[in-house]
Length: 219
Length: 343
Image 1 (cartoon, rainbow over the protein chains, first blue to last red):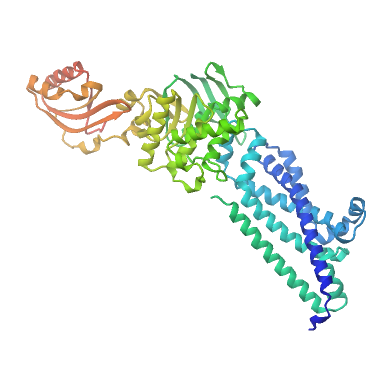
Image 2 (image 1 turned 45 degrees about the horizontal axis):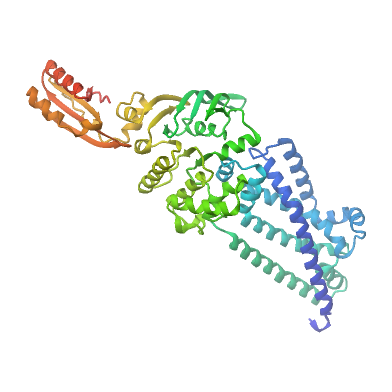
């Protein structure tokens, strides 16, 4: 193997693109997925705002989105991405499918984390005369914070691998680089370096996530 | 202060009504400590929760300080609950918040106080429950007893007139239980607060309650002053609950011989007569030997009481004379059939 042929500038740029895609997609995934997860939790059976029909509809939509393989979602969403971002290529063209792909996943994780919060705490809040929004904002979310951070960590790592996949539709980033050089031009060295960077990235994200979870764990 | 009228609660299970509470009538006076005791599943927890509408009654009414709260909803309900404190078996503290933040929580929720007022109140409450130096700790750093003190401080934050205790000492060891009960009694006396507590332990009732209701299968089976209920339990469930907390053990007296000249009496007395030499006086007066087989002297809240099991070797007539003298001296007398083991 001859690593001297590698254009490290390209690699650096691609890494930065991957980080941008992951970061932006994570931001929107949390902004959309957290409320959706809270709504799933609240409308569920025996919960604060039990709404069987609404829960059923949300649940089916979440399941459908989660059952479409991401590679297919990427292609199906091209017209939507074009409409929304003006392009379906590069970093901007990747963010909408990433967000739509991971939001239902994150929302389901949020729902599960909230269900783990001790019911007695909710009852105590009710007994103190807390309104539903106060229970969510002042008790449920702070109590669930470590779990939510762990869910966000898992989601971030899923985003890194989804972002790499978007290379297939010209999405940019490390996946794009690996595909164009490593696969189409048989430059195995580029493939090796890309994979190595991805491994390091995922390790770092998991490490940082675990640290954060620990920092906010009070139990 | 608090009145419950004809209260009933049903649950729908597979389309069928299951009775949880039935025909409950209670009156609780201001400043009283009222105990509700029963086995698990008797409905005591449901009953307590109808007082702040965590459970809505299916029938009947609940009156608190002259208001019928049964139909309260929305802001009216939030407001009512802010005026009623509640303490839980498993504390139900917020683990992400410090002790001080937990105590401040109901004050923050109500939106009626400034940050400074809250700070002053929290310090006051920390002192009241004896946690002056623990304000900045997290609940996980505290012992069970300390956690319950935080729970009590939190319940008192909004100046409630009524405090509901849901098995507040059941998760604590006996020593801590006594300390928490003393704290509740102290608060009751200092603040004139009415307390309604549920428990499955007669010890709790005996230590701090003024009145007690015994609940079984969703119904109140016995109701009265703790002294009366504890010393003269009528209902089977009450008798077994009392028996678990009493030194007098009748099983030790079981004998096969049925001597007609042998009379077993259980004597109960409360208040000042506890300290008088009634037995020796009567024995000297009647020249009948009275053998003391078992005895216990204790305290029901502030009332000293005694219970003795005595045996007379006498004729039926003599026994009746002794019984009458005892009754005249203010002692409650019950004949015991040792072979049958009657309470």
